[in-house]
Length: 153
Image 1 (cartoon, rainbow, N blue to C red):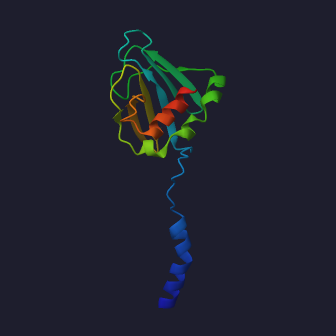
Image 2 (cartoon, rainbow, N blue to C red; image 1 turned 120 degrees about the vertical axis):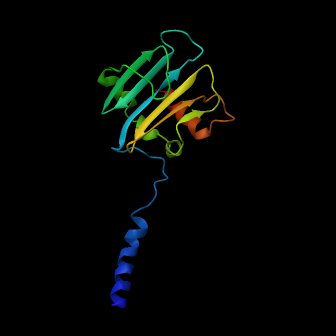
Image 3 (cartoon, rainbow, N blue to C red; image 1 turned 135 degrees about the vertical axis):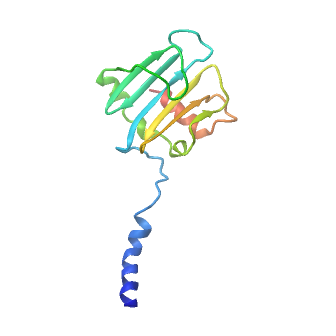
């Protein structure tokens, strides 16, 4: 009996130790991405265009232009953009750093006059950040790099 248990354990050991490998690669592209919202907010601006957001969800790209941001998440009226616009940004959800997903929602860096907004719903968990990437002393380099990637699109 002890021999059978030992053989069973030896047979299962490779599965037990390799089947649950933690993904540290930073590649979070999967079907578990519900949406990615990103854009800019200008709290110092008092114009109709002080909030500009894009949303990638279900193979579509949406935009919202508004006057204010009332918390995070924020009320928005999404307008679907042409499919060609989605094709330009469809790989962005694959570029979300795993470290960011471990951060609690809230401000990253001190409040500034131009801030980046990032909201992610992944694995049924929603997180939202207001980020000042120019605050290099308080914003981690991986967050600044992600914001730089978002701003290229």
